[in-house]
Length: 126
Image 1 (cartoon, rainbow, N blue to C red):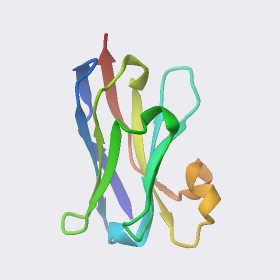
Image 2 (cartoon, helix red, strand yellow):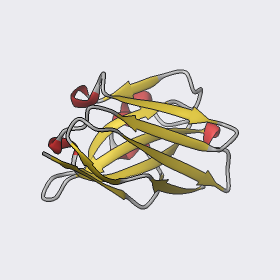
Image 3 (tube, helix red, strand yellow):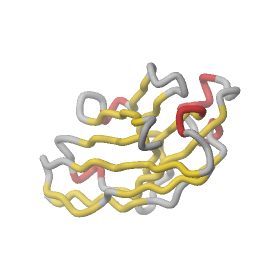
């Protein structure tokens, strides 16, 4: 599967952006999908994800209540809706796909994912 992330940009604090991860080659619904981000000088961190079932989502504490992940099987996409953005959310955002067989505990780390899209830059100004 190939992944393409899009939707990044420059937004003021308090604003919103919607990132999209488009899959090609395979149905996105057959993978666990994760969103990660990496700020300059920092390690890549897990933001959130959705299980292949499409039912279960998870988020890191710093984005809970502000970010939401959804999947559109018809479009073969997984979106990351980001609201109430903060300067601390500034980073390059990546989407990644992991096979169903991955152990649940690995889905919160990069180890749970096999395929990565190119990143999309999100910049939040204060």
